[in-house]
Picture (cartoon, rainbow, N blue to C red):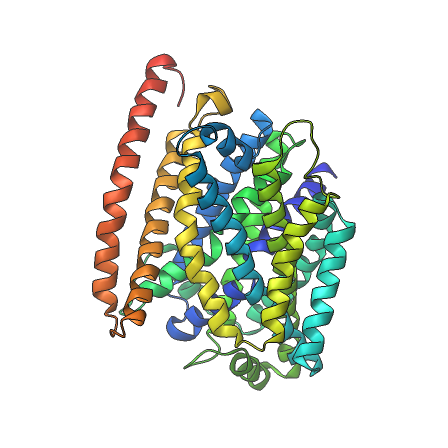
Length: 440
């Protein structure tokens, strides 16, 4: 029962990273390249698991969430204000950007199933999300979301299985890296939509009170399940050819499998959007609480007005843009672009904190494998962020972007920033080995 509750509890992370952005990106990958890019989700799932484990481990062994550890390390220094601005701006404003896509995705899913007015659905979904956030502490919300994740998983996985995808192309696409011409930016998007920066703060903020073994079991099952659901969306997306759209995919599924498939897709899209519409405001509030709460004051509890003001502002942002009838696909893509800028900062902060003996102690420091995976994730995150910045700059100056040049320049930026971090971690590793030769 403890393991079952742990899986249900940590499914909040699957609810957070499988949102409309994941549906859009994964379905687009399937529509454009079939099963060839599934290996990207294999890497992203492993990376998510390593980063989330490290973030939760910090909270369990030190009693400090990731946000509190960052505050302890940097506040009071000259860099403290800059770090605070980066974290608060990146996470809270990033959550607000995500919330627009979450609300719009949930509305589109409900509209496909019910045919109601988008504005009415926006108000109803926003009100229901606000009600759950208002009455529930983070742990209660986590258990409520597990039901939504189960609904979403069943909808997409059954639909994917009914399409009867061939086994060998699935395995080959999942395990053998391949980069078809023109797929570079989509590969980065698949990583960016799975390794979500605000999840690092969310997972760390709710981990207190669990044992390491309990956390690792529940986290592993929920994250791997989330990765499998994302792969199922790629399989579903492969059912269409040409430009991706929610209506296009829904129509293609109904033509191939019947009207029930259209309903299942609508349910899955709604569940993905609605669950993420709750977790994004929750993550913003938890991050703000961890950064600004001072010992003993209890001004940022789940019932405090400051805490509620943060999640309410994020939620209202999504509702406001939803009522303005912003087109869902561009809004979701914009949120993914912002994620690419935010992710490098969050991953680098996590690497520094989880390799600090003062926070984790000697026995819970990162090992070689975790540091290797984290360095790879940071490299990909910087590559993703630089790519999005260059694409935005090209759009501002009305220059037709060349994907090959963008990826090449982004690669140079990533290498230039990751190499110093890698050297610093190797130096830290040598110190650990010297002090404790039995550590592996």
